[in-house]
Image 1 (tube, rainbow, N blue to C red):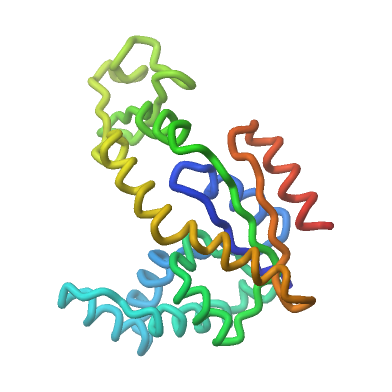
Image 2: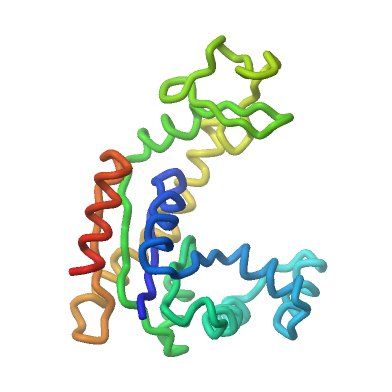
Length: 218
C-alpha cells in the first residue's frame, strides 16, 4: 500500500511527478475536482449532495470531501494505494483525513521559489483552436506570438498572467504551506506517521523524478 500526498505551489511540477509515481506503483492520481466530478457523474449519494451544494453556489464541506475520499479509495484501482494531488489543502482537512483513519505513507513536497513559478507560468502561450502550448523561453514558437502549424495568434490565458499567479501563490502560502509544518510534526511522532521528504523543484524533471522514486523506495 502506497498512499502519497504531493505538496507544492501551483506550477511546481506536481502533476508531472504524479504521472511518474502513478506509473511506477500502478496507483491512481486523485484530485478533489476529479473526485467531485466522478461522484456527481455516478450519481452516488455523496455525489448528489455535492451537486446540490454546488448548484446552490455553496462550498462543499470538509466532512463531505473526506467522505468522498473514503468512497474513492475503496475502489478497486486504489488497492495498491493512491496519490493525493492538491488535497488536503488546509490543516483542518489534513486533521480530518487523519481522524477518519486514512493512513498516509509518504508526504512529498516539491519546493520552488515564487519568482521561478511566475517565470514558468507567465511565459506560457496557447493556441486557442488546438490547445497547443508554448513557452516564450523554454519552448518558443518558430515565429514570435504565432502558432507553428496555423500561423494564428497565440494568447496568454488569464490563469497565466502574473497578477493571477501571485494571487494563487499567496493563497497557497496562506493555506497549504502550513501543511508542511503539520506533516513535518507528524513525521516526528512515530512509526505510524508518514515519511516526509522535500525536493528542489528547480532541478531537471528527471533529477526530481529519480530523487522522489528513490525516497519512496527507501
